[in-house]
Length: 383
Image (cartoon, rainbow, N blue to C red; front, side):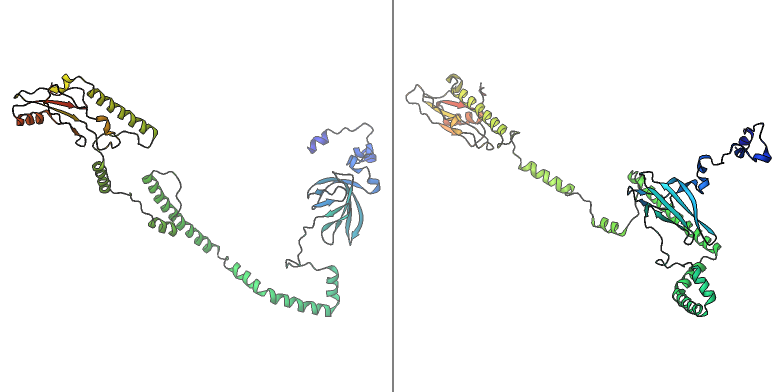
């Protein structure tokens, strides 16, 4: 960029290098332009960067370290041969002006007016660091022999106190002198750890393949082993126990079909009522049937014997069935000498077969008997 600026400068015809010296001298301007407008007063405007955190006295706001301002710089004195400069700048949050100056004695900046410093300085005395010797103390050590002797005794006491820590530091540093041996030891350690990690990865991969898992496995611990040993995975009942329980249920179950609904529920009571009504209808139909279907004639002698017999069967699993439905309606025969004998079978549960009836009739002899058979079925098995 420098050569471009040089080639683009315009030199007027009346420009005389011996008289003007430069184009700034020809135009009577300063090289810094507006920044040097107060140069006659010894003030130069520069870009000043805040050296530490401060609090503004005007607006009480925090101004952080590194914030830049256009500050007026001027010389206010010397520290021996080092000049002391003061900087004056305006706060960017209010109309307050902040003034700071250099401090060559402590290599720091001091706030003159307009702000307060946020105290974050490092105290070397509190942290037991080596303090720099002041100039006055140096002059006194050079000129005063007694002060030098006293100062030397204090230095020896400090050395005795710091000797254990210094020897520890030296021993620690001596252990790192042989770089080759340290490097070899470290690489051997890394190789061993690498082999262990590789073996563990192989074991983990084998477990993942066997259990079909895709999650990372954590290393084993003694607590996990103890906990796993306490756990037992066993079915509550063995195969033989289940088989025995199933057979016991089958043996204790009723032989007859039972309603699917429980008697305690509303649906169970409704189904039970419907069953009872059906049975009552069957019995009523059997009782109301004509006598031609119920009377059987048997060939025999001249005496006629009529035996009205009604058989009502009920299941033992249905104890709520009212047996009064099956009341026996005696059938009267027209013959005056007929002997009528009602029989009722309630707890038998089965109807007598026709063959047993024929055998009984044959044992009676050549008598003629009229038998009334009331059964739950509508059809007569003897027809």
